Image (tube, rainbow, N blue to C red; front, side):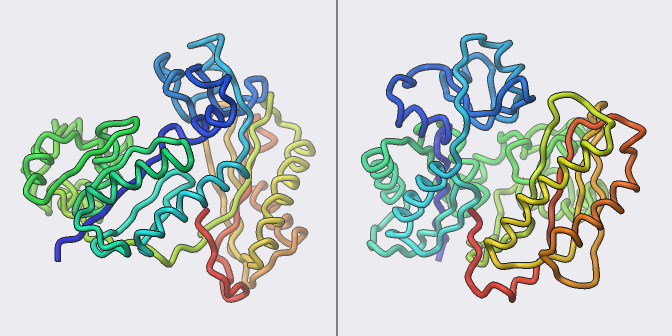
Length: 353
């Protein structure tokens, strides 16, 4: 049986929720993000703001340069998570095969559905209508025979769009598709492909699997399939937390070791609270550092036992700091993450969200 996948991507999710809840913000250029004086970053930009070239992950300070009258809203992740759960609840009325990718993005396998609706397109149309009616938000939706194509399709007609790729349309659709739209093709891979004079998937299809593996390692095999619209991934229902982290960007670059350690400890406190919340322990600790020259490094250490003890973990972090250039170079950002969890300490399914 040919699979039927839907990819749902909420439009400017955080910003749209804020505009919905505050009518005075509707139709205005707004962003959800941190304070510019604290080197805040744009978490989401309304479509009105995007007209000025403002995008997610951009520094708020830069966004204000592009449009000085920009309205900045501090994020409310508790509210966004509540709305996300409402969305998931709607999706699960149609199928149990639901895979959240983030608070605003989700895959659904509707090859078989609870409402016995005959086509995936009908389900997609119904979902869009329900999200608009029940939550007063818009979503862009892609429908296709696999996850790769469904995600690509959801990007075609944003915002509030719907695009369907049927099985017989795959070959023609892929030939002219820019390779940067393929899952896993980041900046480095894209630049390598450009140097090879490859811009479209049609051009990528001319390379043999051996040539792709020679240039991209194991990922070359994936590229070979993806360039042809082939993706055999299923919905992942066994989603577990892979890591927990927290970081802070300083308002001014610093080489004050005591100040850096104090802030690192505060970030670790946030991480420990999350460990205790999920009732899990860790044995791998990672410190993340961004220097004033924007060079980023991470240093990790795995200990021989699981722990959630803040003092034990901070001792590991202190060792890792000695392996960095902190004290000799000024630091812009410091962060900590933990991974390699003892999931048996918590029998409940851990939510991706």
